Amino acid sequence: MEGREEDVREGANKFPERQPIGTAAQSQDTKNYREPPPAPLFDTHELSSWSFYRAGIAEFIATFLFLYITILTVMGVNRSPNKCASVGIQGIAWAFGGMIFALVYCTAGISGGHINPAVTFGLFLARKLSLTRAVFYMVMQCLGAICGAGVVKAFQTSQYEMLGGGANVVAHGYTKGDGLGAEIVGTFVLVYTVFSATDAKRKARDSHVPILAPLPIGFAVFLVHLATIPITGTGINPARSLGAAIIYNRDHAWDDHWIFWVGPFIGAALAALYHQVVIRAIPFKSK
Image (cartoon, rainbow, N blue to C red; front, side):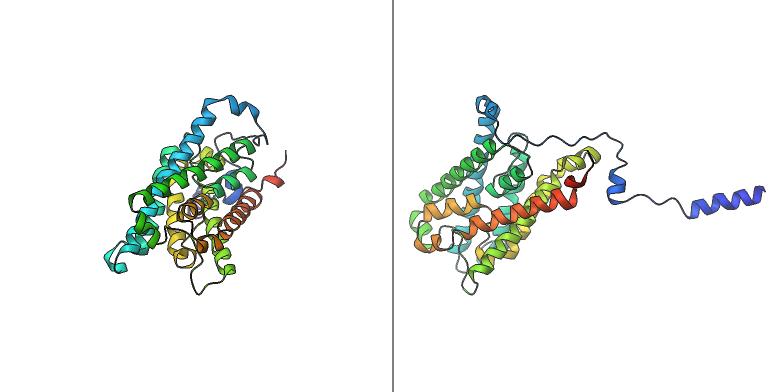
């Protein structure tokens, strides 16, 4: 009998109980987690709160700095005699991704670190913030982008005009449909990453996730730029596209401008839908 019991124990050691995966593992969280209630559609109390305006100012400054650094980088690449004499497309992608990493890290605790109307729109659709705050953020982001591009032009007016001002346009050889598709998919990648990196359920389960959140978001921006700079110059941020277009203000910069609003907003909406319905399965959870 004793030998038989030892065999059973050895068998148990050889074939340990399988660990649950996916939703089964999530259901066994050791920490209690409750789904936060959706943000109200209109929250008039926010208008009397200093934190509301402080968050808007943070979005303005972050988007201002974002455009300032990234447009200067684009100008530096465009003025070089060849790509090998500058940081090239990879450097532009690093500038955009690196700035998002730094700025999200700096502003996440104040405004959430959106720095992009498409990100704000996606989070609004998921009811993570009110319409009041969403509209305020978008306005401040656009104003910050305009000011950031304006400062770059003030530094080098003639060069800015000659080198395209960092404005987003669909490149020769690509159709408007190609540009729209690139913007939709690129923004989906970004907003999907934002949702995953800031998921409150993951925060409750894995405490390291919120600390690392700016890194995957910045890296997503970097990768999308590598893929789509040759197609549209990479928008995936309507404020970035608007700021450059207004300051550059040439006809061809406005011809395709609608793509850099419609594409990112569609991509953000799809990412919000995918995360809420498929990844989190919120509509199917029993109350």
